[in-house]
Image (cartoon, rainbow over all chains, first blue to last red):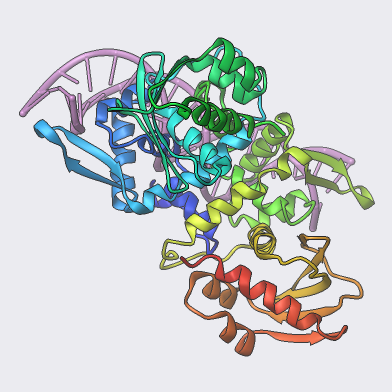
Length: 220
Length: 220
DNA sequence: CGGGATCCGTTACGATACTG
DNA sequence: CAGTATCGTAACGGATCCCG
């Protein structure tokens, strides 16, 4: 952010907005909550962000200590959240809870990839998780793969294929959004829009119970 | 927000940012959480927002149903949060919690008035409030007056003088910020930077206990 | 004086093209 | 793949002016 446009106010809300209040910045953080990403992963997911803006925002986030750039395998550059950057999770979830109250745009654009859903889903599951629930799930949403780990009262969802999951769920993006928006019940979602296979007995019920409760959080 | 710059994404975070993601918008909502305000109250509190931008933002907020414009006494126009707009409270609090992790700007600007602190303080108190606590307090912060009502497990802080309070607290803005930032303990704040008078016995302890716990939330 | 509207220079954004 | 460079357009910031 240009120095001239910083609020510079002695108020923690303004201090936060001076770091993450720019256009695109919160959406970049949102996608990074799905795990480390390459420049082009982010550019694809953000449907039409200009390359120079993505460069600027990543630089700003790095300067402020929210994101770090590091070399991954095969020499590719990876951007990842720092512990400080990961603290935006609850904030992003509150944004999602608030945004869920509005009708979707009549002509919505689909994101270029589904990293976007990880942080919202993680935070929602975290809030409804009951003690003792534990499993490893492979989620396939429109052929994009997620790993969902639940253990010790913690939920973690990453944009990566899962090895040896307890349960596998295959579904699509739109019905998930419809369910979160209240246009479909969790029961109908489970019955008609989810294909589920348990590799460890009983874990299918744990997964669907958690997901159903999480998606229902967005209603009043 | 210009239609061309809306994200239009089928993601609740983007839907929220399409309403409240513009520059100044969240700070306007922040100040409105202190109670209904006139145009010039907002312009003063936001230290240097251009009049045309404030007009634009208020119009946008009204169009989206977050703010309503109504006639107050003596024919003055008042802007107030709708129930939907009031739902931004938890979101603003998460922003404050996150922003509190950063050092203040070396040359911070002071807000033109102290409406700015109401929502942060309300939300923080709400989260640490213990059952059974109830009082009405008059807060005087650098000669700006707030009414703090605590009853039935709810906290409400408004930018208005209080009539017949149980307890009166006189203090200043900077020590409150220092305490929230962790540069001062709640004990030192109470001992050296707060002048407190109980009109109903025991209510002074309830007020200071609540405020101390609230300001301490911003530490790790 | 409160509550804006208008004008204008500056800055950021968005699209496309280009490069190591 | 991972950015840079360029350029037209849109938003912002500051000042001034208007009107009841």
